[in-house]
Length: 199
Image (cartoon, rainbow, N blue to C red; front, side, top):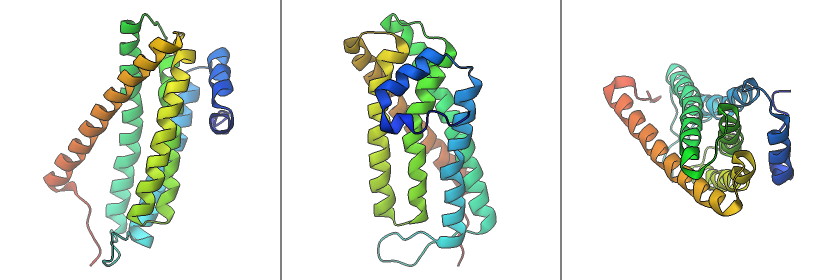
């Protein structure tokens, strides 16, 4: 089942990481999971951008044309998936420095299920007030970081002490990756592919 670990990572994260590690499922499962979960922020970005409108402070609602919102949502969807795959690669490569030797599927499991709470915060876009979305996003990011720290020793098969340092290295790499993706977005928008607003 594609989303068979979704409830467990919220209700019993330690046991769920053990379950994921013991089952040794095919890489198709975490890939399918992330492909489905990434639809949430993408589709809600389209809907809220084109049909609800965003409120930033006391100004008027900001709406996008449907075509522009669709392009933004599509770019977001593929950007999120590429981001998870790049994070997987970083997790896999960093493992060597900590005497861990995970296979690619273990690294993908850690990246995919760690990113899940952050992607689930996309539901906040149904109430597109900037302060609300940012607050929920911060909660999702915090839980994603918690999942990373709790899942690293289990999935990478390293002691807790090394796992903490390893997870901290992954968080640092993830922040650098996020900065690169944001800079790439600015560059793409400056080339004429930015959002088109409804006047």
